[in-house]
Length: 454
Ligand code: 6PG
Image (cartoon, rainbow, N blue to C red):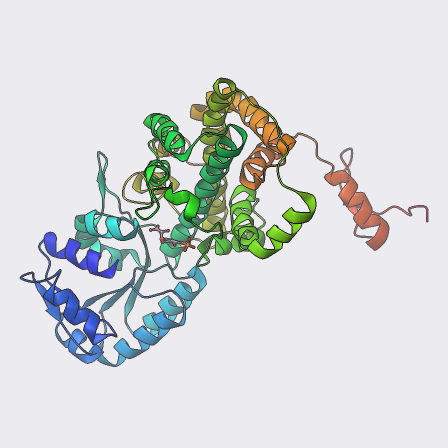
């Protein structure tokens, strides 16, 4: 990603100095991909910093965690007041807040900046989510706008807020990414196992569905499913081990949602599903005892249409969850996140780009105080028409015993939010029974405790 971002910067007319902890990587890059371009190779932090004009702008693309602190620590002796460090990795937002404060004390400006789009996006234009001081952002705005993806609305970058706002937004972007990937995978699994349709044909089905959804993740899935293994000629997907890995950003979203008391069931289910997939051995043992799916013949013509709508709506629900987490975090951490801008810059370059980010943008643009996307006027028809179809899909999958945690969670989120009455009254009564935790009443104000019969 680092190399591609450098090439992107150079293509836009900027000169770039590069440094990698492995000299060989730098040499190879200069000799091969950067040859003849405005790229200066450097072989120490001191040399890197000395090669930059002031105020210096240093962009880090380093694995999140300790490595970021090590690199910042190594740069610091050579940096001067007014210089800017941009962390373009997937750092945890709490680390970004800490670094922002520490660096500020030393006069160094810090922009925690989410960059999405993978290697391809880095080269051709990623979505960029910067946070930090607004003034600092303005000092690098031109560069970021130049390298960002573009849509009809302009470059996919916007100042998102103070401190760690940018990395918080990127974390939630990734939480939504996990959910969309899981939802597509569950629908794929249903088509594959219940309808017995081959990957080749599912690839075509997804391509057709994507005319409406315009989702990057659905598009890549269409390509993935059509891919044959060069050695065996089989569908490559059938040769890939079913254990999902993760670097942690989805988990952080789920943890943060618990911390802030925001329901995030679909995204959390997607993290849980990856964790469960990792238990391959255990799954094999349980399968050998309890068996797998129940046989049931489903009619292709009836079920495919349901699945298309179920996927559309459940993905929309995942976005609704993510946006509501952003909304609460914005208040709690004083980020003042521009939700409509976020929906706008996610329309290009990033992994979760999809057609309905445009109506999501419209929803926040017309109603900035919208509490949940489920309430947006623009989505009323989708929820009315597609929610019974999502329900049917969940029921079909449950009947045959298929693992569909994200589809179920999306439906639960919708059902929970539209429940005027929940059995939380019983929870309150139970808490009061065993712990005298008190409860509130519907018919009068105050806190009450009952001497329950023992
Ligand atoms: C992006 C991606 C990127 C990375 C994911 C992978 O927006 O470009 O989100 O940041 O590919 O973090 O995450 P996992 O390894 O956890 O799946």
